[in-house]
Image 1 (cartoon, rainbow, N blue to C red):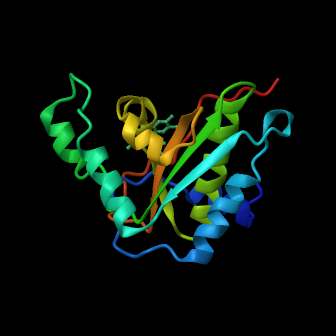
Image 2 (cartoon, protein in one colour):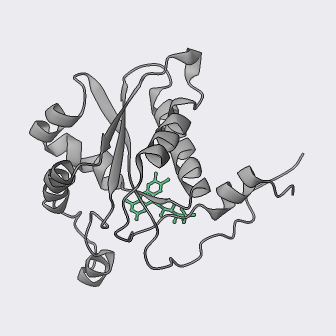
Length: 180
Ligand SMILES: Cc1cc2nc3c(=O)[nH]c(=O)nc-3n(C[C@H](O)[C@H](O)[C@H](O)COP(=O)(O)O)c2cc1C
């Protein structure tokens, strides 16, 4: 494998459940968002909208909604406690929504992955929050109307920040590639 800077960023990226209290600077955030905007899209539709929440008020309001979201049934209490604050102390939340049709779900997920890798290249880590996609905006019409354009569906939502406590290394990948 060629171990260039891009590969180092891809391999360094890890999902974090807790971030530290350092804010993300404007230039870093612009870099991350630009990476998302340059993801490929089917037919070059660029069907997405990025909602970037970074203000104290915005994060507080979003955090309240995120914390009030009922957890799915069947998760053991210990697992819920281990998750800690669902906002993960993150200084930035990015929600990618898209105009339905075409390859919008794929386009939106590619944009988010580009942002994850660009963030990792700056030492900023990320964490996908499936509850944002599955439950939050489906169950909270008021929040959706406030944050997401009319007619758009949320396809990806993630937290960004400088990494908190080191996560369990889930780096190893094996057994899923076949060369023909
Ligand atoms: C579609 C999708 C949904 C995910 N949902 C969550 C989630 O709700 N909460 C969470 O902590 N991590 C979530 N993750 C992160 C995965 O757990 C993580 O990517 C995986 O364990 C591999 O670890 P790594 O990202 O550190 O390499 C999700 C990832 C994807 C791609």
